[in-house]
Length: 288
Image 1 (cartoon, rainbow, N blue to C red):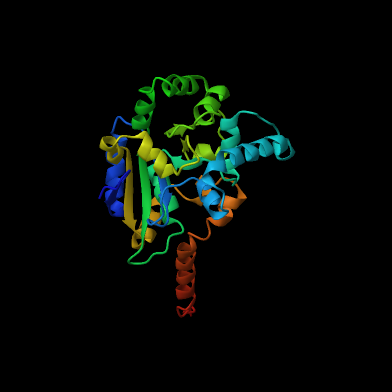
Image 2: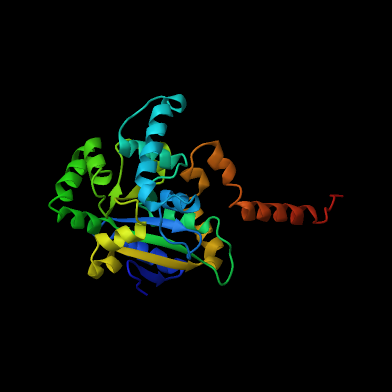
């Protein structure tokens, strides 16, 4: 099924694994995002927070600028360094839970599937989603623009903060676009999760609207695909992903990730407990 700006494909867990292998052989670069409810759309945390708190779309850019300024001013209280680079500030804000225009993605479809299934309800009529976006198509589109193309190329080559600000945060009319973003400095979690971001140009409009205005109708469906999988496959998927070493322990290094891993692994511990109870209930024969 194809909507205005993305294609929906219903697949099984095994089907997604085959698609992942096929995409790995593709010459294009894809990024992925898992969501536990397939009914959810694709939106930035800034868009969701703005809707929740009734922030008018026309004032969201100014609101974002104030939040970045406040975060930059007080960053040194919480971190061992400071920075004024807006791309790095946005990545830090996103990582630590602030609403931003960035949307978390990963280069690994298996990590995306883990986040889709991890906290999903294993119910017959419910489903999860793994979004896939072809970032090469996005880049080719911006390179065709005589105005934004050279700026994006400069940013990709040098990670110049001024180029980032000019491309995404121009004080003139905002540009409707969606591009992949990888800041110069990645934290440990972003590295192990093979993290990437999508970043929209006009935060006065929705992410969906940016996609619709940035891409022509003939390429949208080949650029953005929403794979919908049945939630009832959760346990099998998580077991297989764990065998691939894709779990909370590896994706969230440290004590928090280790502690949080016990939730998804409760079935494993229940199995161990059942085996112990079964063993202990067996009659013991004393040797005569």
